[in-house]
Amino acid sequence: MSDDQKQAVGRDRDSIGNTLLVAISVSLVCALLVASTAVLLKPKQLENEERYRQAIVLDVAGLLEPDTDIATLFADIEVRIVNLADGSYVDSIAAENFDPRVAANDPESGVAIPQALDIAQIRQRAGFAPVYIVRTNGAIEQVILPVYGAGLWSTMFGYLAVAGDGATIRGLRFYEHAETPGLGDQIDDAEWRAQWSGKQLYGQDGLPRIEVIRGFVQPGDGTHYQIDGISGATFTGRGVTNLVRYWTGPHGFGPYLSRIQDESDGNE
Image (cartoon, rainbow, N blue to C red; front, side):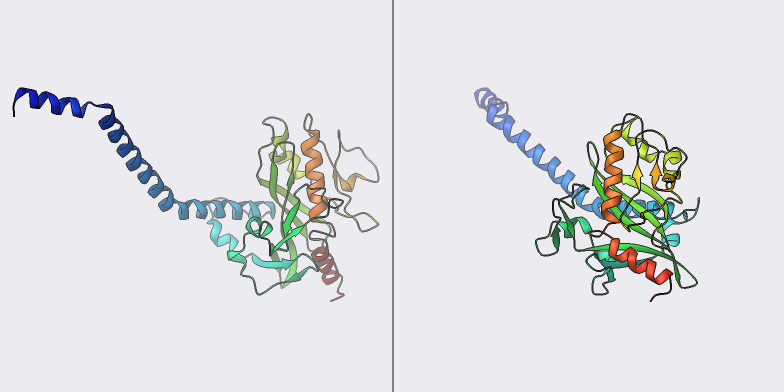
């Protein structure tokens, strides 16, 4: 090959077109590697997310034990699907395959929430929901309910544990939110969460009365319905109040909890 031919080949290699071709090829290879890795890791990621949610359910139920396999502990919890319209169990839907977020956005299974009832500001929910049941000697000792609703900056997702009487709170724990660090995120604080245990959901009229107040709970007749407010996070506290009231009200798990109360009272 002559010197002129060699120079021509060198110029071709250094041309803008050749440089772009190399850059595009490298980008495609990298994108393929990233996509392949994401696909391969997706099952593991989903498994880790499920284990985390199971840990939160166990924690809010007071059943999480250190250095104990989460799957082993969770195996003792009965998971059922509930028809929110009447509180009945639905055996035709497999609990392990049910995703309430997906179902809420499904035109066939989603239920639009009337504006007057949508205090949690979620607009639509699934017609069915999972419940996590802890039994003692066959009787319901507590149920853990998935709850969610709008905070100041985010939708807050959590679990509410309710005693077997269907009215006494055992605990509340959030597992996903994006509330203000140092303020709204105090809903994760252990001392604040501890206040929920033993509080009552319903007033004498049978409607949800539990409330995160502004300031601190003072001695009086309403203390068993009240939770200390979070300084600087009034809107987050209000969001917690509204989501708990919605999900324990007549358009949420209210009919199911009413069945639990009847069972506890021996009426079924």
